[in-house]
Image 1 (spheres, rainbow, N blue to C red):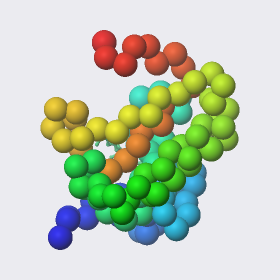
Image 2 (cartoon, rainbow, N blue to C red):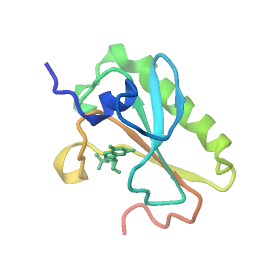
Image 3 (cartoon, protein in one colour):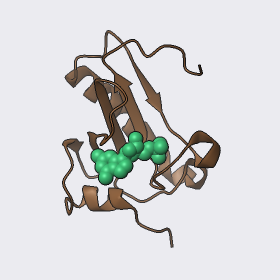
Image 4 (cartoon, rainbow, N blue to C red):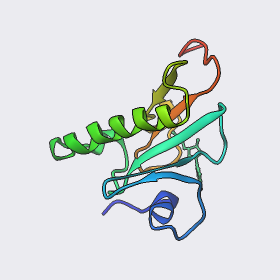
Length: 115
Ligand code: DGP
């Protein structure tokens, strides 16, 4: 059994978070340590620890995360100026929370992907 993280508590609204979107499949909330004017995390309500744990059964869910990200970018007014979606996997990518999450970053020029 995968170990729950703080993100499960955010999904269940047991701890505070600035939730900007939630449905039966995903939850989106502002990052506690924003790296850009808009920095939102989109996560599945179901616990999947890393990208390596995604299965074909999750195909629709992952597509939904992407659609929700684009809708939130529009709500935030950054769809035309541009934004970046990032998912980190394991140590070398700096994954800190082992519940997969898509970072939605925008609201400024983000520069090159890898410095
Ligand atoms: P990563 O390095 O990809 O695992 O990113 C984890 C992100 O999660 C990091 O940008 C900070 C954010 N984060 C960690 N704990 C919390 C929390 O309790 N609340 C919120 N809103 N964000 C959190």
